[in-house]
Image (tube, rainbow, N blue to C red; front, top):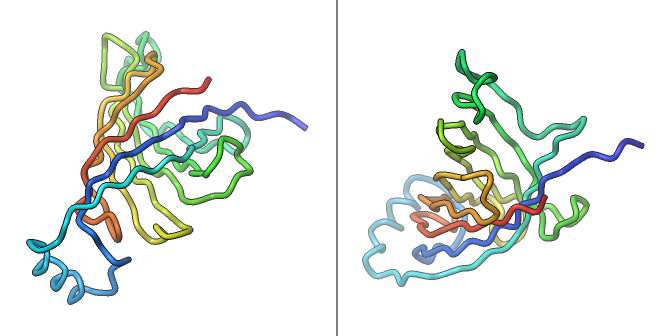
Length: 170
């Protein structure tokens, strides 16, 4: 059996969000939630999980656009890729699935190998099931440590803000 190469990224997030009970049931519930917002205490959470970018036969990312110079540029400038990577509780791809990392990244630097990352961490299990976190920022690929902004969320993470930190494990 062919062994599939994989990039594992350990993600650690610190999130500040108003306390929310669960996933929204309708517009009326959201409106009531916003009316009570001024009385809600901010909550800080720290999450840790792994997302797996599969480079093998069952590829989890796909190039969808490129510029005229993308493949002659040393940094693949202009390349746009979509992704749908599993999120797990452990470093093994076989560990418990808690969600998916879905989004896109584009090579936006002509100087270094770096991408603009726009991702949603969509949770499908456990206490965060049905909720998501929206993440956006610069990801310099040659650096081991990466830091990207959490710019929002849905469900239990409604109005979330914070930082996602990750380490490449190549």
